Image 1 (spheres, rainbow, N blue to C red):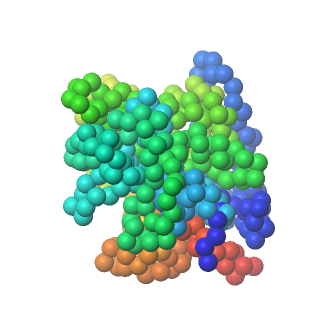
Image 2 (cartoon, rainbow, N blue to C red):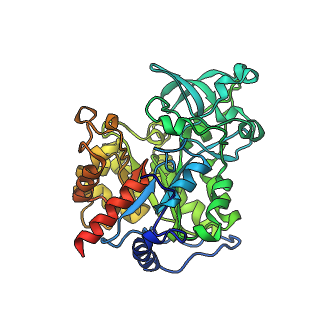
Image 3 (spheres, rainbow, N blue to C red):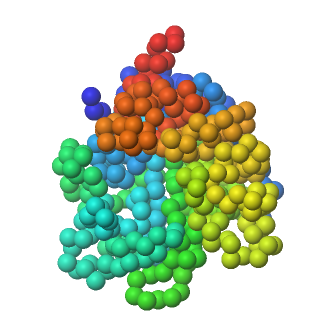
Length: 416
């Protein structure tokens, strides 16, 4: 059955009260809520903030791009449905528009051409006035042809309609039209409603090195885009007062960006938040590490601190399946890891005993994402959730959060 909502128990949905009580108890164990204040000189960097799910009895349901199995991803409708379904956190992916304002899209490509055809999360390709915005850019070492957020004003993006990117697979979602692209501030305003005070924000910075250093705007301008999305995120959180570490996770695939958040940006802003290192395929390197190869030894050491030596030896995501490196990352900046579900077992073994939350991505109920030929870990979503929890997951990203909430409720009842 399809319902609406996310994070623990729902104030409006008494069915999830037991889960809510459990989450709140865990959250209160983390410490006092941070308050927003004007940042003077940054204080000494504290130890990484413990994550809200540090209690081994808790399990966090993260609505991946909202309830994206039922509504077009990263729309307010998808977030509200995820909250109604009982999800504990809603995930937002953040990219900038021309003036640096952060909007919520999985990629900066608002629509892009792929080998399988056009993949669109907006209707930009259907707008004649934007035909001249089509271009090819190199993003994190990969050529992408499409329409890109940094080449549009906020007003232009607000005029677009969101689209279901998998319309053949998710026909119900594709029927929901007329939805707009939200900004980060729009999502925060949603979560600041009193009835949603139990719901958290799980924010991912997409391609921060591209936006700050390597990316270029359309039209042959050779200057970098030059938008510091990490600083924009922290500024927006501080300005809106959404700074309670019990309701925040900040995540990124880039190591240097997370270290900047921990050691520079968050202390300067006067609040803290648990940071999650997203983990890509072990054969690949984080793009910031690839870019940092151009730096001299001193600059590389400054960017990566105590992990610099390990990254010189192993400049790839395989680093996060090494227990010695994980101990360093835990002490330096990371409260948790977000590996692909197929990589969870190796990462969990290396992370044993370190107190890191483990939030693998992404569970989806459709058979196309569950069959063994796609490398998944089970052939039903509930079986996959069982497996991931057995392997050490303390939470999960899922497109259909109601499925995880019902599974969690059943597991809790069975253990009583």
